[in-house]
Image (tube, rainbow, N blue to C red; front, side):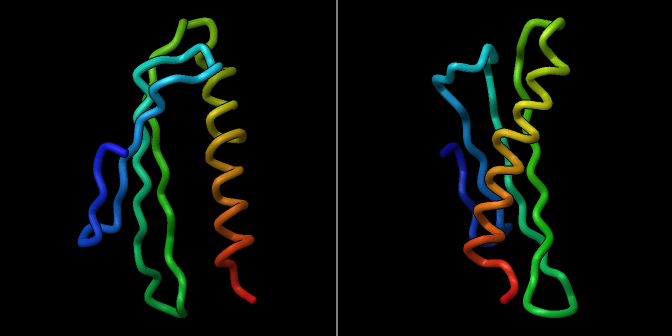
Amino acid sequence: LLSLSDFDYTCTSAIIDSPLELSDYVATLRLFPVTEGNRCFIEWTAEFECAPDRLAELTETVAEGIFQTGFDALKKRYGQR
């Protein structure tokens, strides 16, 4: 965990060691209130370094393997009932 702000509803983290062939991975998760209902919008971004020929593959891996898995877990735990 690199930073956490209850005021801004953000957290930033880094992956220090990974089996993925990427480095300098830093991701930020931001929550924005939705004005209607008891919901929020989540923005999750990441930056990382990798070999140019692996960029598309690793971007897909991060999007589906990390982000989507995290979104699915949040929905399962906090989703509308």
